[in-house]
Length: 356
Image (cartoon, rainbow, N blue to C red; front, top):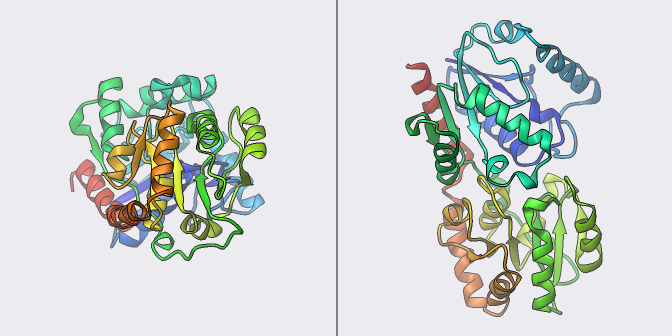
């Protein structure tokens, strides 16, 4: 079986989708045992994961981006030639002219462009809806990163339930063995992009109510869409680290007293799974996939309520026994999210699509 996966996100500034693509393809290749995993545009080696820039060098990246633009020219059948010999093309929304002679599959990461379009640019909404019509609704099979995402796709897009398979993503092994980084004061941590969907203004409101004088609120993440006002406020009311390289994140996460993630909607929620794997008690939202992914191993709060978020953080900061309880439950829950398991289930999914 030969599978070609659109891995263009590895060349772009991207967060969750890039993490997924990077770790998923690497583990698929390790698990393949005779199957061939190709990565478009000709990504045999990914280099190091960096959310702010390409995983490849400048000239290698430019050549591949040029190829992407070429295959996206209206009516260009080049993807049929590139995918020659493949059984499956696993699409992302970067390739506009999908090949016509192979089975199409894709991953459903989230449905926020339908549920919360106000948290996206108009261009992003158009691109995702176009992708849904051209790929998701035509695909021979789809992977959903959570059951919540699967149910959203069934309800909002009318896709047949039997076409969508829930396969959970993984957490890098480094988080299970992470040693806490040292900082001057104990801290509550958020890691993620600074953008409206992540709900950081409500977190800052909650932190003001909490008045936790012995703790810092530490926020790590790159600036995203429509982040200027929130970023300015973060710099005044919290300790802002900006983008933290992947290699430094496990120690930073493991050193936190509490990890807080009040996002309005997530498809899977990599940061909370990483925190649980590192043995850090989590406060997160009671919406979207987050109750499903945490599975009783986190404090949940209404993301629209600063008082609920503040109360959940306070419960953990004031109760060592509760923190210990969630550390143990979180680690146990996180062990369910392994990239090796994701890869094996994904290969079985591809075999079912191909019919082998």
